[in-house]
Length: 87
Image (cartoon, rainbow, N blue to C red; front, side):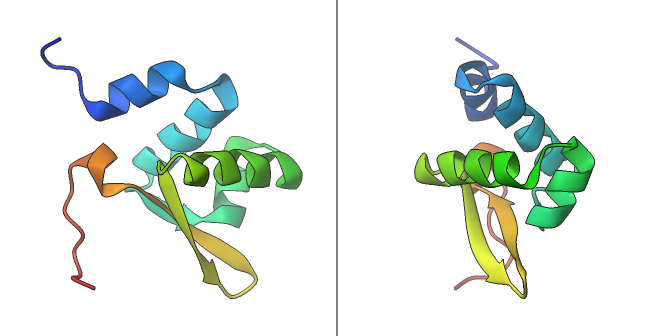
């Protein structure tokens, strides 16, 4: 249907905690550190890890090592923002 973004479709199939993580990421501009996601959502370390692992497996977020944590980034196809840097 018209006006439905890929994001709307994704949010509909996620559970409450997964939605919370995605909405937090969006509010912070689409990328943040895993430990900051934890603080912002109030989820436990293990729960945050499991959620991000599931989301990454589905191609909704990507994770890259950043010192002792991970930098989590929303997939481009969700935000319709082209990556600022070309790899």
